[in-house]
Length: 270
Image 1 (cartoon, helix red, strand yellow):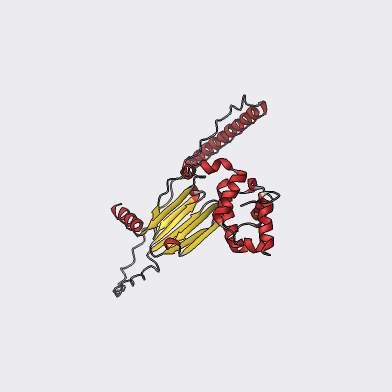
Image 2 (tube, one colour):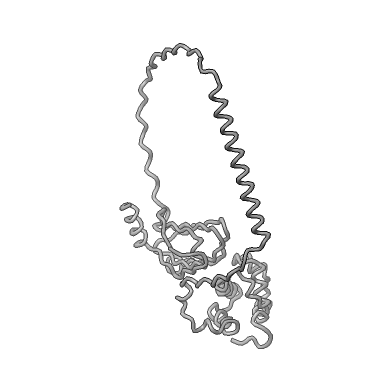
């Protein structure tokens, strides 16, 4: 695969224009932001949410335009990130090392003065509260206590309540529409890829903060999450713990009937 002339992004744009496809058409069908599509054709992959999104976006772009997704991704890696070709994909799931904290140096004088002012105000408020509580306690002690007690009120006679008919048993809820039901709730933006029942149905899109996603399958669902730490996963109503932090990537997480039985048994034990 050769770009002939120009950059990788120019080559993508030429392939799209040769097929008379607009960026807006790709954005509407793949659910990829138009801003990200324009950034890829301008070789501004640094504007994407994270490096892992570039591969997913390029695969969806290639499928819609009519190119080979694997060839496009491999060519992108050879041009922009050649070092990723020799990297083990499993390394993506490791927790990134935190940068060393740099000593900010001595606290500025203005910050110290601000803390002193806050402490002084807090002390003043505390003194005012103590004075108000003392005044209320003294005023309460000075109130007259010789108050004539009202005669007790006779309790009303018991009311005979007619026996109510037994409440009919609630109908049994209908069985689920599919053996495997997976719900995903996103507290922040996350790229999602799902392969349902071995490829009968596929999904690849960016979900934003506050959105939810419902998936159903007969046999299995394979999930790839670009930001697993911000996703709450439930399988047939049972919570599935991922034990991941924000920014961690989970690849090819398989949820099948065995997973459902295991989560159900775990819930019944607890």
